[in-house]
Image 1 (cartoon, helix red, strand yellow):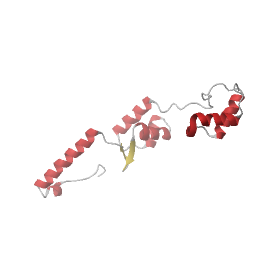
Image 2 (cartoon, helix red, strand yellow):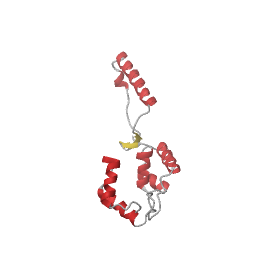
Image 3 (cartoon, helix red, strand yellow):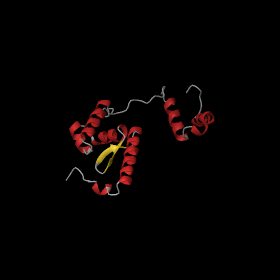
Image 4 (cartoon, one colour):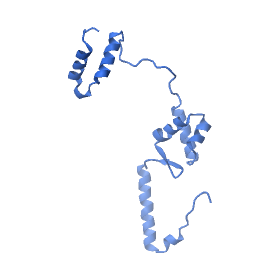
Length: 147
């Protein structure tokens, strides 16, 4: 080391410079020893294994298209169709597309301002219809797509 400091002196210098944001003493000692043994850069060294290449913009687009074609499509089915690991598809759905599963249907986590405004307008119209016709709700037919 060029300054000829001990690990303790190095740690004390770091504490003086960075205060509470300083590395722990064990990490400071580890870095001190690496530089003493010949390391010259702070950039991470290459790691074993290959980098993840599954979470690409193209794959995000493919998952988005599958979800918009069928909101009830499972992560497992999407992973099989796209030949991607389930964990990658789940990360794309939850992090990149910001969606989550509600009642077996993937929906956006946060409504856009336009969607919120539309909900307010529909609510106001329904409230007006109920006020004008007390029997309005008895005329509403509900159901789902399975029956």
